[in-house]
Length: 220
Image 1 (cartoon, helix red, strand yellow):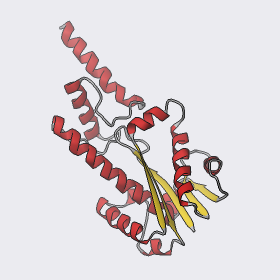
Image 2: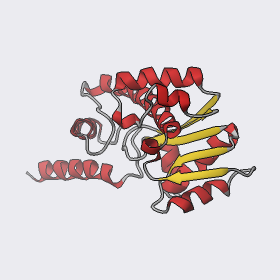
Image 3: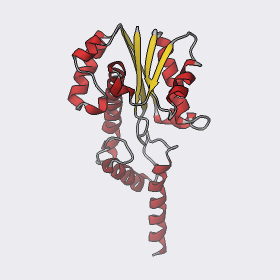
Image 4: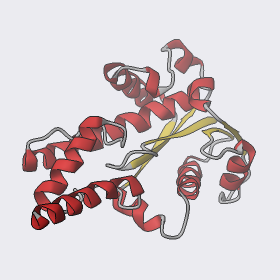
């Protein structure tokens, strides 16, 4: 049995990190439906492929790590270590013969070895950069992870947008819609929104700007 493991949501300031693993006997059926890296698919295509993957996989496993859990873990470990722990837990549950993973480490082999060291059984791990593009089995995991994160972001947006009537966006720090959402929330409530990763330094510029603005208003 072969397995692919990938994540979605490593870099956003809002929302969870999602890790997914899928197991197939081989990747023939994935090639037939043109499974590819989730970032190269439209949302509609991802939803279609995710359904097919769930229906045809021998097994699959997903893990959703909330923003607050990421913040807590980052007090004692790096983001790469968080991913290593999550990948190893997913692989441990699936117990495949061979596993292909999308390396988060600049050193591909080290990433694979660190995952192997946390497993209770011996396994061949093939760790590569851009594995979601190279291997359809990792592309399938990428699609599952991305669709689940999209669902989680949709739930968060439905709840928070009602408070300030401003769209949340993708949750990524470079997204101007997300930037405007955080800025508006901070200006309205004087604090960061729920589901924001406080361990991301970039979010604090919104608080700092708001403090400076209020100070300037007071001085005037």
